[in-house]
Image 1 (cartoon, rainbow, N blue to C red):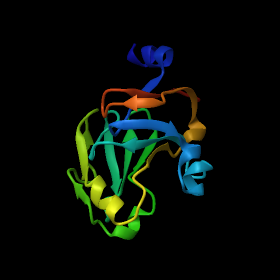
Image 2: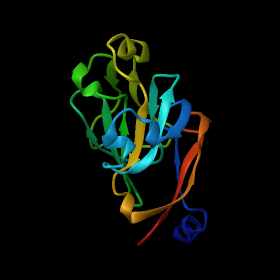
Image 3: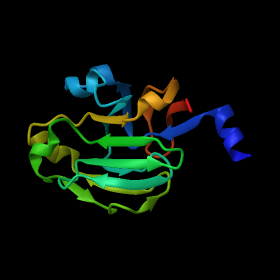
Length: 161
């Protein structure tokens, strides 16, 4: 029965960060801006707490803690990438709050990020939020503008299969 309801409403994903949601085309990295990794949105964060955008399982946290992969119960692969070229910071400014393999609930903090430190080190804090297997879904809605981490629905999707 719940699967039926999901098909009516769609799959809802909340913002992983508080700030301003913008289109991917505004990201200063062609890999994200041209949707080579997948489709989604980007957030210009105003707070450094990164939360799970939905219930799921943490399948990957990069050793530098700048990006997290989450798999949803519906089979979507999500990537939360904090900043641009932040892998070069080798973890400076990032603190992991969960480990790979754990289940997370929507709104649960997964990373703490020192946004000021990242900017001091010369990196953009704009943060892509990507569905890496976007070919499996139809994007029904994108929410732009002010968003709250774990609360504002920023993407509504419909599974193709």
